[in-house]
Amino acid sequence: MGSKENLEKRTLPFKPFIAGLAVGIFFCLSIVASLEYMQQDPNEISRYVSPLTTTMEKYLSEKPNKTVSGHQEATTAFDTGRVIRVIDGDTVDIVLSGERQRVRYIGINTPERNEPCYEQATQANIDLVLGKTVRLVKDKSDTDRYGRLLRYLFVDDIFINKVLVEQGHAEAVLYKPDDQYYNLLSDLEAIAAEAGLGCHIFNIFDDGDPKR
Ligand SMILES: [Ca+2]
Image 1 (tube, rainbow, N blue to C red):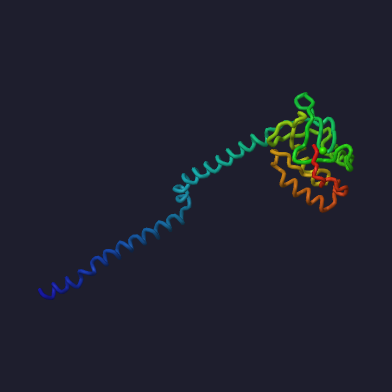
Image 2 (spheres, helix red, strand yellow):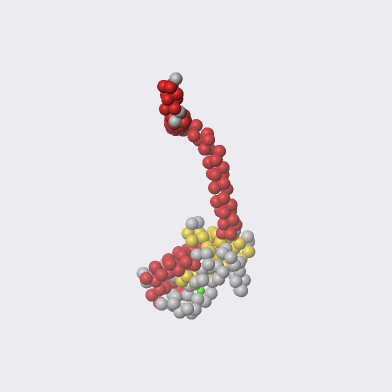
């Protein structure tokens, strides 16, 4: 009797330990088994993950679309017309829906009629757009005080305002509030000035008088 009681007293503290160990082993085996199972069958993982992924993809794909369509409303609200006359480096006449409209390029300025390099800048503009179909893209303003349309011009993928600055035939000018490309155009003007391209040799772009 005495020895049996002693045996029970000795084994009693081990019972919770053994039970805990068994539970622990069971959990470890369950995790290992489920990991192996998932590794073996990737489709099984995707079956659980895909509803979440699909929701996320849907959300992500919807979100940029919303932004893009908002962006498109702002930047692709464009007209397409044909350039019938070039006035100077930054102004043209365009036929839009059968109507003749004068268009002033935004973000840039080219020399006026009485200034050096007027002929070259005008010729550069003629070479780029005369007789061509152009896309007219608005920034924020529609027209200036002279009733001219204020626009960025594109011939296919060629951004005309930008090319004129790159060539050194135009300077970048911030006509508020139309500032969408001002930083880009400023950087390109600095590069053209550094290279002494186009009109920069006449030093006419730093007079602080960016006339329209
Ligand atoms: Ca001008």
